[in-house]
Amino acid sequence: SRIEEWKAKSNGKTALLVEGARRVGKSTIAEEFARNNYQSYLLIDFTKVRKDVIDLFDDLSDLHYFFLTLQSLTGTKLTPGKSCIIFDEVQFCPKARQAIKHLVSDGRFHYIETGSLISIKKNICNILIPSEERRIEMHPMDFEEFLWAIGKEPTFDLIRYSYEHQKSLGDAVNRDMMRLFRLYMLVGGMPQAIDEYLNGYGFEAVDYVKRDILNLYIDDFKKIDDKGRAATIFSSIPAELARNTMRFRVGSVIENARLSRMEEIFADINESRTVNFAYHANDPNVGFALHAGYDAFKMYLADTGLFITLAFMDRDFTENLIYEKLLTDKHPADMGYIYENMVAQMLRSNGHSLYYHTFKERSSDSNEPRAYEIDFLISRHGKICPIEVKSSGYKSHKSLDEFQRKYPSRIQQRYLIYTKDLRKEHDIIYLPIYMTELL
Image (cartoon, rainbow, N blue to C red; front, top):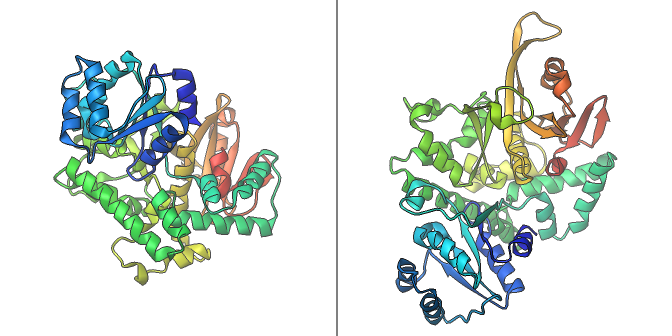
């Protein structure tokens, strides 16, 4: 629908750049859209295109010659005003991306670009970034899309109705929803992993697919940083979250490393779209970015299915029972960080930037200051909504209470995200985790 909106409003006056992690489905969605919305289309995959096609972008002085040669080399007929050209994985051909300015100005065709690692230095060095680009970000498939994929489309209609009308589903229905949600967590939102599951090959086959994707990411990070620091940082994300620290500590991952010397590495990791960054909100108020502490952050994997596999990459699939334990809700209490990663993913895919807040406060029952943490903060109607995540039905919310006491005038609604049925108590909404993407 976002691509349809671009086509209708832009009508060729801008190109569309679809960003996202590798294997998230960018190429598939772009080609499917072009196939259904244009008389003809041409997909140029810059990971395997012929050199003579790449050489065409060296000289755009005669666009009529450029297009005739392009059609001849690819065997695709393009019709002005009715055809679309897709630059797939455009980061591998920076001069093609730079050409967008002239191609859009020419106006003959529509252009869709797909890419990951778009803005790292080697991919933008010595080129002029076209202002004629409109960007959208593609995330792994969310829970609603997963339900579509497994043939349970009406299920999310019920979830949405319950959320919108603040109506509980009942314990039995909630248990069914949680079983489906845990299945989604395990398989994840990467289309290739979902396809493997739908083909009936089981969790072990799904896990191998996810390992292949993770190894692809790690190889990319090694190309970005030949010292291996980016790959090490990426691989350490589950362990760092499991420590339950207030921020990602680079020194605990890479000996003697300092954040101030690693800023470019973290920027490249962020650019890969394989990771979601959550920054500390120093002053938790509307306009989080104005008061964010960018030297204090947490990192989550963009896909929780990949997160689970990455956390156990050091073991063979058959040697761990993580899939069985999670699916049957028999996981140990210290695996709450998986649910936290899931909430980060769902908030991010629904358009929220991620922020959290830590503070020290003397609680009402103690004179000693204690450390508290609000897992996530979102803004709504000029106020903020603090969110606390529980991996069980446990309803304690000390951090939410102290945050309310500290900032009463700033809060619009408090949320406790957990595994039980929807309910409201005073000014706290207890929200089943599968409803998070509706926030």
